[in-house]
Length: 109
Figure 1 (tube, rainbow, N blue to C red):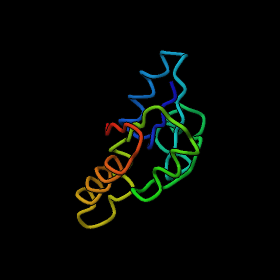
Figure 2: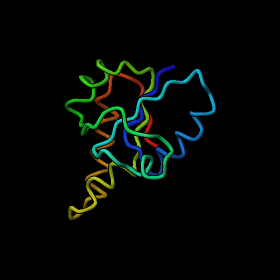
Figure 3: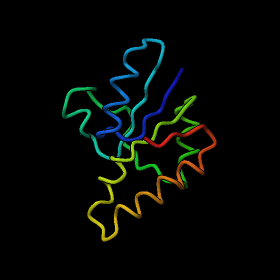
Figure 4: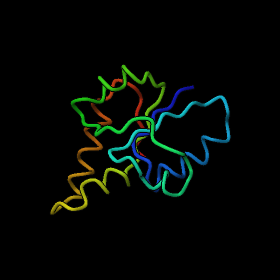
C-alpha cells in the first residue's frame, strides 16, 4: 500500500511511527518546508516532496505520487497559516477543501 502523508508535524509523526511498523506500507512524505518536525526529530531523514498542497493542485500531485490513501496532517497546515489573523480557522477550511477536492480517499489527522 502506498500512503501519501501531507505534512510531517505532530500528527504526521504519530502516523509515521505507526506506519513504519509495517514494511509493506510505503509512505511518501510531502511538506511545504524542507525540515518539518519529523526531520528535525529524526523520524525520517528527509521529505520526499517539498510542495504546498492546495485544493487546486492535490489531484495533479496525486497523479504523480499515485497513493492509495492520503493522510493530511492538520498540525502542519495550521503551522503554515498560524501567522495570519484567524489562521487556524483558515487552515481548517483549507484542509477540509483539500480533502473534499481529492479524488483519492483522504483522512485528516
